[in-house]
Image 1 (cartoon, rainbow, N blue to C red):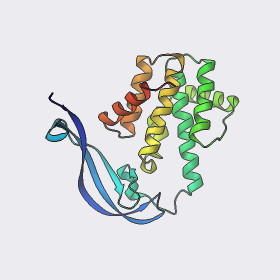
Image 2 (cartoon, one colour):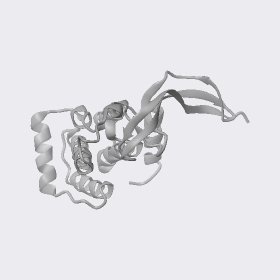
Image 3 (cartoon, rainbow, N blue to C red):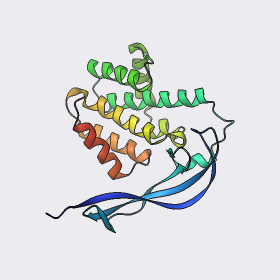
Image 4 (tube, one colour):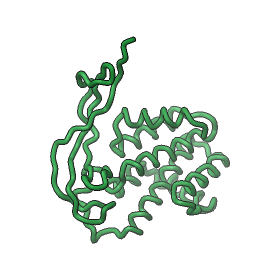
Length: 211
């Protein structure tokens, strides 16, 4: 039997020093990108796609970040402020999924509250606050980009996956993922600069498990 497939490979294109938000000190970094390769018996043979997902990887903790993290100033946002920004973005992107199909289901509200509780170590968000966020988003008519651009430089791979997973669970809470919700989810993954193979892997893993 011939075993073949594709696999993402990471390539180092630069290096230097930066202030790592996780290590909280100056560390060496590798600037990398990824590229899909055709594999034969798990051995990479030739590239099948363009180089994409340029990112920064800390040599010490191995966390990965958007390339804008190089400009991160440790005297800017405090740890609590950064956490608050992340939690606010999480609330907003999940709320955007609720209103993506122009229907607001009671079950979706409950799902968002449960997911938020799980992803923020048991922090609570009230139904009243969530409804206010939804109404504000509907009035402002802003995009996902507006809620992620401020914190994107400081999101590691785990945070990016958490946002995508949260959005997926919200969208599929009514039993299916419609086209508008799927497009918003994929757009968010692009804003977060996740590769197509990465997001497909995340979605495949989610679809293989019960909510």
